[in-house]
Image 1 (cartoon, rainbow, N blue to C red):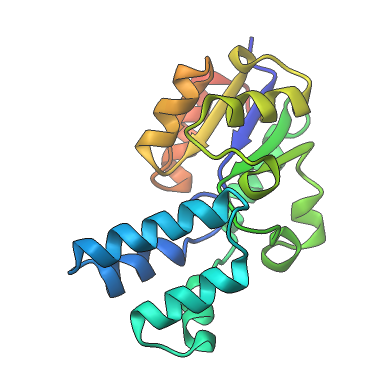
Image 2: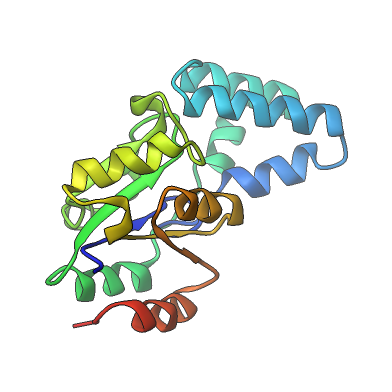
Length: 190
């Protein structure tokens, strides 16, 4: 029985500024791409501070820090996904599990949107990131449910696979309309 629905942040609940930035500035250089990816892992794990990460990304791209921040932090909430959450909320616990280098929830989302989450697990705070098994266990525990009682939604196939390995049902996000159709197969929508 499904008791909780867990959402990824960037690329699902909000647009993702990081992946387009990485592709635009480092996509032609395997070395820079690998370095940017590693620094992103470090900031997500709480090993590297976000300001240091931003300085590195700006330097590597040959941009000012302000320009890099503007592009990377361009995360716009998806109102359709939040409308779907409002339909789920009466029957299911709602969680947020994200690889994030800091807690930007109040910067990206309105207070009403943040209030929709019964539990939040951010990688920088946990010291674990998706697709580590413990990241999925942490959000389930914080929601007070078993992983088998969760649906996990992410736009990255490897993170959906990680959730499935942890016992959750995984849904690969492509857009809000597709998500609604996939969820309708698994849960009751209000």
